[in-house]
Image (cartoon, rainbow, N blue to C red; front, side, top):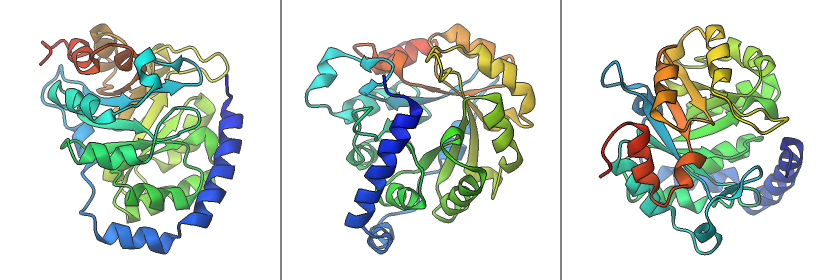
Length: 275
């Protein structure tokens, strides 16, 4: 199983290679042809009633911890029907893995999804260089994931500023208490409506998940309205437990993608009848 250090080492090599192929000026030309990004922040923090949880529903073929999530994902893979099922069954937004080597994703999935659904799309990858933020915007992303464990504080601030300049929402994810404390001074920087704070419930040393991790750390978050709980969320009761601590946005992937119909699985998670 690949470690985070291994993944980041490979990502550095990948980014250097891709930077040689495409310049930021080329990205700027592509961006001029695109409309304004969809408002990811608003989509996932807008709650209809007291018992509502916003779900960022994820499209993921495989992972280092789980391997291939379903046998049929081993061949040709089309994320669009899954995204449509998510939209029909109550997703607030879509998260799309674009890392190819470890997660089986493709950057091209983002445009394909946005052409067919009205929901905003998060590019979920290992972003370690400003060039990737430009790449994300040019690929049609509405939001980017920034993982605190992969970034020093100075680079994190630079990426937050650039994301805001490109009108992208940044979901800043922390796994550990140490990383959360590193991120905390920069919450809502440089503008409140462009940053979300994620707590990932996966222990990177054991790869196990536990939503109690979010419940333990929520007291260190000044505004739980911008908090996203990620990983290990499987049933409606998990949503209820998180709502009891004012956590009302979650990112769910593997538990949905393991089902034959991820959209119906999302409906069941939300305690709805599938459409």
